Length: 301
Image 1 (cartoon, helix red, strand yellow):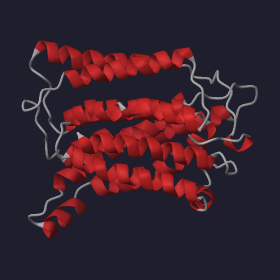
Image 2 (cartoon, rainbow, N blue to C red):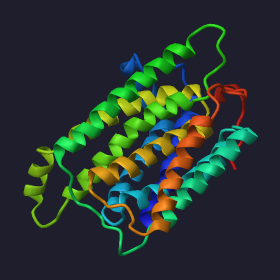
Image 3 (cartoon, rainbow, N blue to C red):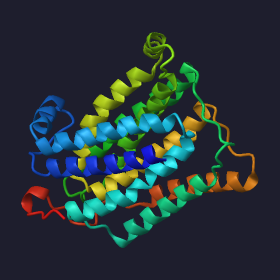
């Protein structure tokens, strides 16, 4: 539990620091990754944010060794509250009443998922068949890249309202969902009993290569999207998609059984359906003016 809460703080802080750094940089383009990396690596603030995210990744490894996938996702999503508070205070971002209602509904949905858990009766799986992992992950990666490219093309169309970030968030969320499954797979193979055998087994699995792909593409895609849209909207959407993807498909892939108790099963399924419904109902264009950070003076708390 402590590792999960620590991961929340690190992830929320990392995203906000990166967003603030990106507001002072020239426009980045995911089609020019070398230039994007050159720009962000020249920003100490962005490097600090990326180090916070990397530390959150390390904490996530510990979480997946002790909690079922669905339980971990429920705790991770609770970090959305901290993210919205930091975005408001440090980035000056405002959310609409509809968006605040949607975030509240998402938190309620994932609270239902957490309430469906029972310590001791929920199994923590350690392995999954590699062909099944690839069957789940490869189409999801393709869909995420396609959705991102479509959102980029639509954002460049003349006379179109600025994108709200929902499409970007869904696309990046799919990549991060695959990354979460890969993290789960890596954590299940880490052992101190036979380090050499563990490393060999890990390299023979698809997990390090999925992490490499999602890490490279996720970095480039998320930075471009984060610069264009509000962190207080794109990160919650991305987190929701990633957590639902991991909780549902990860549970099935790793064979972590659903609850047998009707009440717990209803809570878990209803929470998942509610979160998806809220996500689909969120606005596709941005109704809140988006002011670049470099254009105004920000006062830290």
